[in-house]
Amino acid sequence: MGTEYHQQVPIVYGLGNFLFDTGRNKPIGGRLGLIARLVFNKQGKFSLELLPVMADNNTGCIDLLDVELLQYFDNFYRTISDPLRCMKEIESLWNTFCASQAPHLAKESLKAILAMIPSSLLELIMHRDKSSMKESYYIKGANILRGLMVCENHQDVIGRILGLIRMHR
Image 1 (cartoon, rainbow, N blue to C red):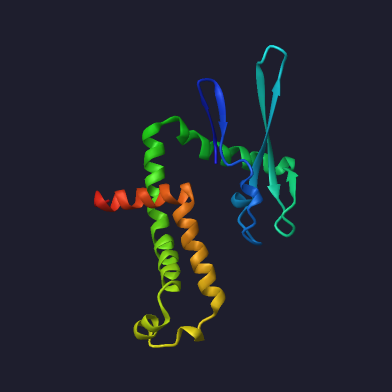
Image 2: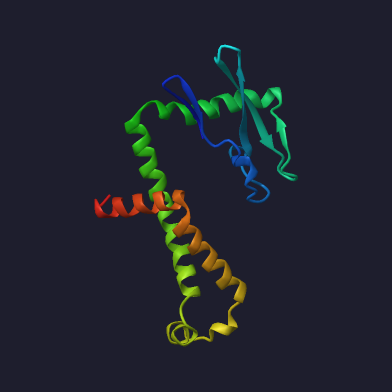
């Protein structure tokens, strides 16, 4: 997710993102990550060392990158870190990301809302008995909607999407 410095203090984004297992056959960019090592001296000064790692596609175990992947990683990391130097670029990329999430979030929200519709109303809307649908689908839907409502990150994305819609972008 990139690295930037603010008032000579490093901000390393996305540490630990590789811990979220989203299944096998993830693209290489989705398996790359960093371990940040901060070393402090007696005067309170520090040095930052970034250790590039990659999750194994089958096991999810983390290993330091092989020499042949280091060049790929350096290019990849530079590509995602460089925009962090310009606030307008950050704003533009954030808007683009949020807009790209709108269809997925709308679909997940609708699925979750359907889970809370009373059975009698659902029968009228969908012309089928709610009991014929898997109960786990509704539990998952309710959990998704709850996550969208309480997670600050989701709230930020949804808020930005709604703001973009209001501005007709």
